Amino acid sequence: MFSGALTRVEGSPEDGAEVDLRDADGAFVARGLYNGRSQIRVRLYSWDEAEALDAAFFRRRVGRAIALRRDILGWLTPGTACRLVFSEADGLSGLVVDRYDDWLVVQLTSLALARRTELLLDILSELTAARGIYLRTEKGIGKQEGLELSDRMARGAEPPDRIEIREHGLVFLVDVRVGHKTGWYLDQRQNRLAAARLAGGRRCLDVCCYTGGFAVGLAAAGAREVLGIDASAPALAIAAENARRNGQDRIGWRAGDALAVLPELAEAGERFDLIVLDPPRFAQSRKGLAQALRGYAFLNEAAARLLSPDGVLVTCSCSGRVSRDDFLRMLASVAVTTDRDLQVFAQTGAGHDHPVSAACPESDYLKCFFCRVP
Image 1 (tube, rainbow, N blue to C red):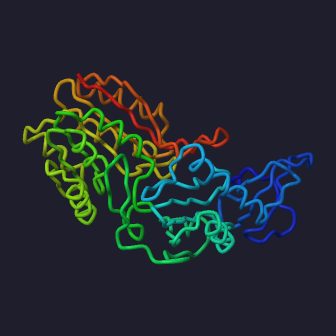
Image 2: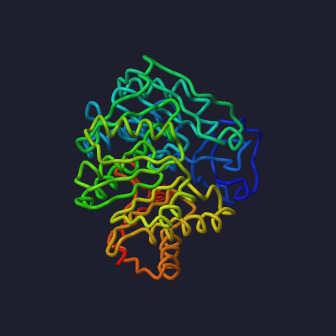
Image 3: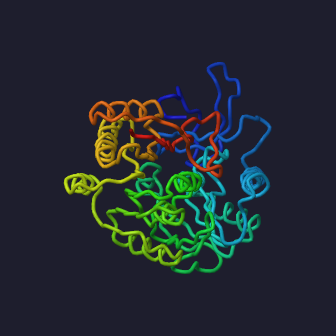
């Protein structure tokens, strides 16, 4: 509940306190945790008036989240990685937990849950038997929530500098201390596999490749040649090591801003048969939506000009503010601007370990469009 949606607050609840949300007639609506410092004034967790937000409640919710990944998806196998808890989608607004082999990485994005850190760590330690738990902060969340957090080792053994994980028969190194997000783009797991199935014999370009998740998968699936582009030289160094560990020597790497590199490739007459565009989030708020769509349009226009006839474009947006309809309209404008048809033959989202709550459509944040470009 945002502050503007509340007519009044009775009493003086402390930040992080359990509170009830009631309608204009005083009838119970939901129970949540209060934060007077945030525009998100109350985060709601239960619609059962008899249910307290106590230790037993959080243990049930965390246990339910883990059960999806363990019992239904079957993804909690040794040496692999997945998202264990996905905030609102798992009924635990403000808590993200990712598992990398025997280690957990936890992000707390609400003041109320940050004040319950030790309780949540106890629960996670009990239910997962993790060797260690590392806390990561999200950029800007301190100001938004009015809390002070820092990255630190929270429980158990320190993780190695690079944790090795397996995905689709390949191995990748993950830096959980300083890597993007919690170290790896877990949400693209199934999209990486889908793109790889299209790579055989094609010359491929992976834009904003980070540590090579798409690029290595494309090469391993039989791509004729792969070029990976990213602005981060440290990320590219790990990408090159990931390629080496998987025996892939048909991948080249180039450091640079995609907004500058793609036009340079076009000017040089380069052409590719398959291009993956997976840029960082462009829209941080509704105010930034128009600018974000312009950025996506520029990248996709540049990619369309680099594609060979009947090329494949795998284009993504992780900006929750950008809807699927927004993104599709942007692609339509790209088709007009470049005079290239864009035929969308598949639309996907995040992996199954990133479920979507029907009550929180914002949890359906990742869009991935697979397009043929005649």
